[in-house]
Image 1 (spheres, rainbow, N blue to C red):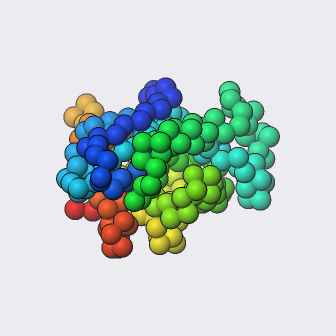
Image 2 (cartoon, rainbow, N blue to C red):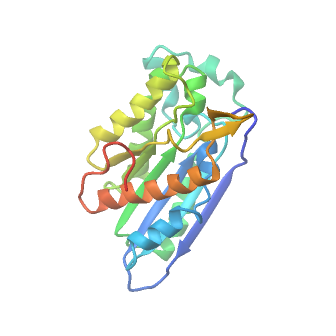
Image 3 (cartoon, rainbow, N blue to C red):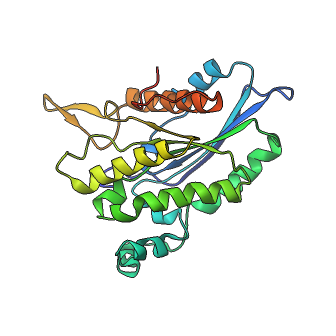
Length: 250
């Protein structure tokens, strides 16, 4: 991502710890807008409010400007199926392989030692800007679906919920690549009974030189609301309720 790159962040946190309480575990992952979300502002307070009688713990693995292929081992095969040339695409990659997938498995394994029998596991994803900008949208839906399937398998959590942060309105309606990724994210969440999505269109409104603009990255208040929306949609999924269809749970 241009002008706003975060370093790799692998964060584990647990709060409201009590041995006799059920545990809800979260995996936060993606690129810069996930890296920019401070869970202590928004996510943690909302979790404490919605799960007063449970432990909530999370890990966070996020890195700015990164494509989904660095999470998905099968990406080359998926890309080829959609008419893309993976070898050409990967010429720009400084790192090969799934750089950010194994850290999720490792950190989750450590989390399970503290919470061996979680009542729920939810994967929160905020990524896609890089794939849209590189014109890799044809492979995005299948890649994201594969990532979710891989996590359910490798974490041994077949009932894992997921909440996808949809790309914001930074990309204009005329940007077909951007719009294709947005649509793929919503369609995938609606096709899975354990999926939901979060609207980010109102999280990036910034004033620059007296003019309001839809920035690539979110405001401080936007990141806080992002965290709250993740928790609210996850709560609906855990409760067997329908998550907010507009991505803006109250």
